[in-house]
Every structure is written in structure tokens, then in C-alpha cells.
Amino acid sequence: TVVATDGSDAVTAPETAFSFKMLPALTLFSGTQTSSVVNTVGAGNAIDVEGTGFGQSGSVQKVTFDSTAVKFTPVKLTASGSFSTELSFTVPATATAANHTITVTDNASTHDAATAGVQVYKPTLSAVSSGFAGGFVNVSGTGWPAGDRLTLNLITGPETAPTFSQGVFCNVALQATGGGVLPKTACPLPTNIHAGAFSLELTDASDAVIAPLVAFTMNPSLTLNSGDNDTVASNVAAGSLLDVNGAGFGSNMKTAVIGTTSVSLSTLIVTNGEY
Image 1 (cartoon, rainbow, N blue to C red):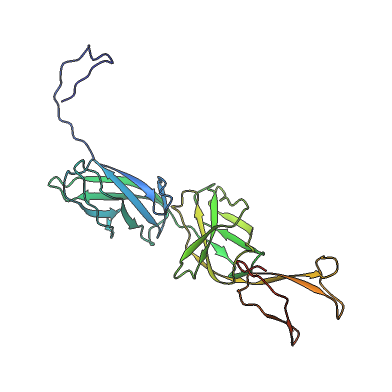
Image 2: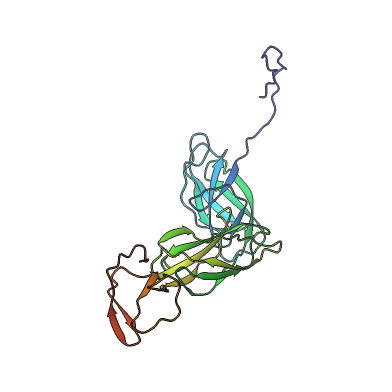
């Protein structure tokens, strides 16, 4: 039954009874911690789903990506027909770069179902496999949303088992062209970082379109300065004082090797790989 009334509640139209069904609906979110509402996702990336208007009891029974059933986190339905928690699943890595349909069905007696469209991209990241702390790494890519702003992250650990995000380190503009191509861009590497195995992660502004991680090895670097006037030095006279600035090292430096001769170093305090 639908009742229409004006703002004063004094003028009311006669009640009208007709068949009306409340349809369930889906809202898509980035599968990252940012949880921003999205309508795009990268192939092989995670996506979260909120649902409303489903049955009043039971749980989600099935999730399909187009016509293919996908594994998802179990979700129960509340008394109001909403998901008790966000439903999560991974978009198939084999999905084509095109528009696709997500369908969620509950196990209530009415088997309510809702659909949502999503645009899938197949982004790539190309970069060299190693670099020096305080240096640069050239990155490029294809398959991104046209004109999208991109963010490059440094991840601790190899690409097969990343453990911790070091956060954004590339402070230059990264933006895909109208054709979805990221032109080769030089990104400065941080100086306050230790040497070792890392991964490079390129993601778009929504954090929903993410390229596969690229393995990256951080190497230590040195800057030589004259011990007399503190200017950068590429050569020095025998017996002269030489100052050395380093980045990307460990925490137990005691000696240096010049040619084949080990020399003692003055006391060093190494912080985040720098001294």
C-alpha cells in the first residue's frame, strides 16, 4: 500500500494498493583498506560487496562473475535483509578487459538476487629489477583506465610474499594517457631505506585497479665528499681525508675496503640504512 500526503500531513490522497516488490541492490568497494566505492577493478584483484534488500534470514548462497561461480567469504543476512559484513571475492585473473556482471543470490525462500556491473582492466607495470637507495627507477605500464592518476608504492618483501607497505615514495606525477598507457617516468627512490628484497606496486586512484607486483632489489649507495671542503669528490689525493655518505646499508658497518685494503671507519650511527 502506498499513501501520498503533503508536507502538512493535512492533505492526503486515498490509499492505493498495488503490487510492489523491494529489489535487492549491491554496492562495490575497493578490496583494499581504503574501501572506496568503485565501478572498476583489475583482473586478479579483490573486490568487496555490500548488499541491501535481500531476504530477512539466511545467508548469501552464490556469487557469480558473469556466468562463472566464484569463491567468496561467507556472509549472513540481517533482519533488514542487509549483509552482516562485506562480502569479498577475487576477480578472475583470466577476466577480459571489458564490462562484466556480478550476481549475488541468497538462500532465502524467495532466492533473491541482485546484479552490479563492473569494468575490468588488465594493467601492467614495467620496471628494472634493482636500483640504489637515493637513486631513480624508471616505470611504465599499459592497460590502465584512461587518464587515471596512478600511485607507486614500495612493498617490503618479494613479490611472492609481500609483508608490509612502505607507502608512496614516488613524488612525481604519474598519469595514464587517453589510451591507458603510463609513459616511462623516472621515480626517485628513498634514501632512508635498507638494502634487500622489495616489490613495486602500481595502483590507480581508486585502489581497485592494481597491477601485478614487480620484484625489486634495493642496493646500497655511496656519496664521496672531500674531507676539506665537504664538496662532492670523484678523486682524492693519497693520504687525504675522505668523507663518505651512505644509504641503503645495514646496521653493523665497521670497515671499508679501498682496493684490497681494509680501513677502519669512524664511529657510525646507522638509521634506516643511512649514516
